[in-house]
Length: 625
Picture 1 (tube, one colour):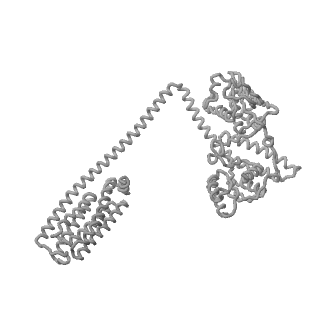
Picture 2: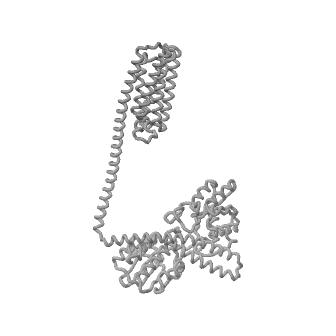
Picture 3: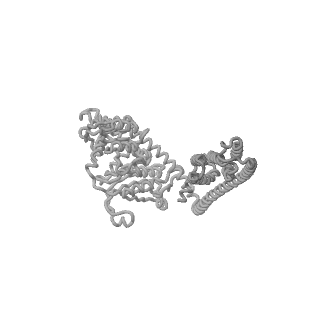
């Protein structure tokens, strides 16, 4: 309770620190004055005096209570000076009424009461307020004396005493003046002392904060000195190399962000190209001459899609989607890209094993491994040479496993990449998979390529080995676990729109790219759906509000849109339509619905560019889920 009372007393919106401290004491005094005055009122009722005296006495008490309560309210609102003036005025008015009742001769105690407002202004208010209170007090006493002589009935209900009136007024004026002078000097000294104490407290607080800051700085300096002394024990040349590599890695991260942004725009374009080509191909008869042209367009767009996928892999903005695939097909798809990377002075030979078993892997990640190893091979053969990529099925036995503790026995697909470059020493081989380790010149490598390859292979449950000698090239053996191929998964076929799953539900489509929005709307309408189209998230939300009460079964939305993104749109739409399904689409994944390359649980997503078949199947799957 004491803590609550202290908090209440100090909870006053006053900026002046001295006035804030005085306000707590003033509040206690005001509350006490209200209680005392209220308690004295019954005594006035039972006192054996005339009714007129009782009435005036009660009036003075009520007036004092009202003005004191007003002063307390003003003080709680931060009006300190006005509060002091209000309670001082209330006291003077009450004393004036009571002095009129009793007269000067019989009101010695009341004259002493004038010391209260004078003391309040002397201690809490300015010198001007003190002089005003002193003047008003003297004026009240003088007017009372004048009224007693001019019209005794008006001055009170007692008989005036002429012989002591002048002495009383004089003594009162002298006493009030001396009290005011003393309180003026005492108040000034008190305020100066409070100001000095407050300044001293603030200075101590600043010193304490400075000491804490300095202590933290000293602790940090001690830690940094200890780390610096430890770092000095290492090779200074290695330290400079690491700093240069870190700077290069930051530059490559910026390039990766640029590549991801470019890939996003290309994905929107490729979605429209492949989608409309698919639609056109599905409407042509089987013997139409334009079918071959459209097939070439689709094939070229497919290769462009692969290039965009590789850009996203480089930028680390691609969702990891392991699936069953044939390594020979994957190598064949990026054959042209590898040849462009290594240049015309390096001969590329690919030896795929017939009837190669399947693996379960993310194509983009395996492509990144191949690209990184091809770039390393190119740098190891500055004068040209030969790069060989081979695949075969192998079975690792106990003898092999005993030599490599992180490998398990069983069937694997072996990917071998060999070059005729400058080779590596044993020291380099031991460090080749360490992050930021590179043998390339300044500005020619981040030291992350081989570390990335190692992490990808390990993530897929595989193993990577390197064999090399100086001037005898290098060979990388990558073992990836075999899986049983699913013909339904591995077969590549294009279904016509008439064979695709259909529906009659209502789909709200939010896509800022006009070509993609028009394509998706056409595909869905062809399959029987009712489609509501919106150019951004805000427009989609307004469209949904205009149809409130009608059914919307699915929200198909791009993740990144102007004015309102897909995730925010989905959160608000779900509130309006609790049973609605949501399908996200994007050509560039940020942390909105994807974390660490994997979709958040329960999120339905289709990657751009998508084909009419992929979109139709995905929409049906989401609606039926």
